[in-house]
Image (cartoon, rainbow, N blue to C red):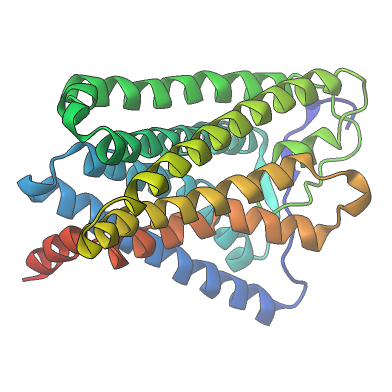
Amino acid sequence: MSNSSSMANFLLLAFADTRELQLLHFWLFLGIYLAALLGNGLIITAIACDHRLHTPMYFFLLNLSVLDLGSISNSLPKSMANSLWDTRAISYLGCAAQVFFLFFLLGAEYFLLTVMAYDRYVAICKPLHYRILMSSTACFKMAAASWGSSFLNALLHTANTFLLPLCHGNAVDQFFCEVPQILRLSCSDSYLREVGILLFSLCLVFACFVFIMVSYVQIFRAVLRIPSERGRYKAFSTCLPHLAVVSLFASTAMFAYLKPPSISSPSLDLVVAVLYSVVPPAVNPLIYSMRNQELKVALSKLFQ
């Protein structure tokens, strides 16, 4: 195939050659997918139905759960279908759609995690100004900015990637369409333009990560000054899960796009991709619900 315009489809990575292992992969991913759907769906329903959870923190958590549902639905169903039907094919437009929604949903999620860090900082370090700084209008604007900026970023990456001439086959060494794998199929120096845009996006991700870390340094300093042990426990219980999610998401995503080719291998690329695209949407509901008493109460009432 000489270029991208003549390419009808791509071939995704096959997890196994034997039928038994393909079915094992299908059932494993199906279990993870259903767990993510159930967990995020319960959080969305509990927050929407319980008026006591209509606060900025839970508003952002609801947005995060919606993004988690979208991001895990972007990659897993196609991979499961390929394993079930013993095929590797994904259409050209389907691959472009996966790249777009990957950048859009994961980018918006990361920006939203940054906003959530700011929300915790204001709540703990500036409690007297919380109602003003985190008003309903401000929350909607920050959420809209996260979704809108990520949409534009995804549009830029998708258009720039699929305008490249591709002449090194159509096999993508990943279980979903990932930009670094598609760039390996390019046969011209124009791919360096997309590499430059990727580096700019990763610098933005790193800047957000530094902002989150600085926010949490200020938060922990303020928490340690709280005289009440119960107050310290409540503050840590809302901050530590968020910090764990950010650390896992940012570290694996930056490693996936910044690792040098010398240490790249199909198995390592696969593990890293699972860690940043599959694990966070599946474990986020568990992390946020286990240490959040208000959410536990809302979920128990929902079951009752």
